[in-house]
Image: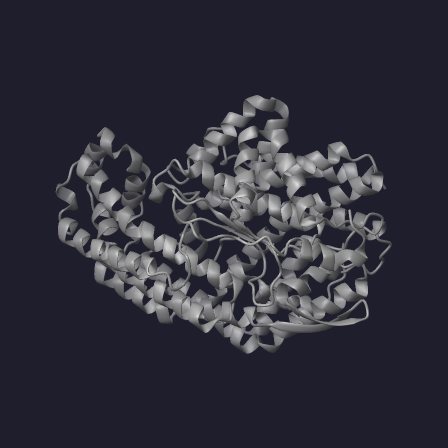
Length: 600
């Protein structure tokens, strides 16, 4: 554990933790990249000649062969796209890399248009033809995909319309999303911290939310949101354009709502997601109760939104990279040897990029492309306790991907609502380890506050973001919203979540404009809440059942996207359609808050 004067040493401890991408390609100039692209486009052309307008004449064996050939077309492109994206992550200002990203996007768009007929023709299968194919053992691997094509057929456009939509998207919705990403990644901030003038990127500035001095926290967040406010004309136009594009396409395809598009993509009933939103919103008193406790612990009567991540003053903690690594691996080892070995592999094979860099993308993620290539993890390591949780979280994603690697390409990537299962579970393993090994009350208070804040950030805040999306999508579908109107809606959502537990600084009304997911992937955020509350229930089950639960979790993780969320969760005996299931999660959270109260 390090004191606050050693921040730079902590950052330096991760300086050499960089990924090795040679599993993918040697460099952006690797001749294998254009070879892979040419080969994929050639195979796509051959695929069209071989299968177009013929799929309804094929049996299960031939359909299986067609799927395999389609995966062979896409696998090299996935790898190229992953490699270029990871390079772009480290330098979001490099024009050569940005040009490469655009080029790969264009190639993928061309190949998608060439092979678009595949899904459309399968979607047109009669029930009798689909049933006959599904009865054949050779088509078993793609059963879920085949069913989903037919079930979602009513939302398809004609082939020409689909092709036009893909091409127009390059200069439409996709272009607006790229503009948002490039604009906000370019922000640099100058601020005085601890008597030193510093220049920071967005990730470093937002990390000051964890600074011990409330003046620094509040100054940093005011500066952060002021920059977004200054660009409000552009950002508001981007948001309106993306949402209007969503509405136009929704209406053309016949979906009932914008969130319904995501629900159908996730294969989850609207009613289940409504229950998720409503039960989470109704549990807001837990949020208020917790932050009132934290205000007392910090002796901060004017406790504000800028203080919700403030460190506990009794026990300031930082970790070197090796300390964080050892802690996370120990948590995995206590749970299961295989979990440990998969996480250790990520370190041993140099599949993690950890240091802060001036032009590096902020945040953290796990990236995977194909089942034969192990994933990569990106973090921005500052040595904060939250960085340890983030590392565990992203390694959980990596473990999930490794379990899914038994699947073929189109069944490989975890289905979105369950994509957070291993990641959040991994965070809980580390928290459980800390709570059992620490005896100091101050340290335990810090552990509990960090865990509760992780839960509220992953669950209630994401639910708040999603509720903001529900309201703005509905309204923008009818009329454009101004910056002022968007800010007012966001302020209302903030108050529904935090109630009377915080002071609301005026600049926080701009927070919506700094949430990348609501621009880049509408309604993606509810998957975090879904996954968080799901995992809390799973973790309770693990505590009750012990080692006998482990195979159930592994079975869930290994399914990837080969079957529906309901079928996958049933492997652990869960019924996601029952409101009482979701409410159990809040009983667990209530227990954590009560435990914290006992340590006051």
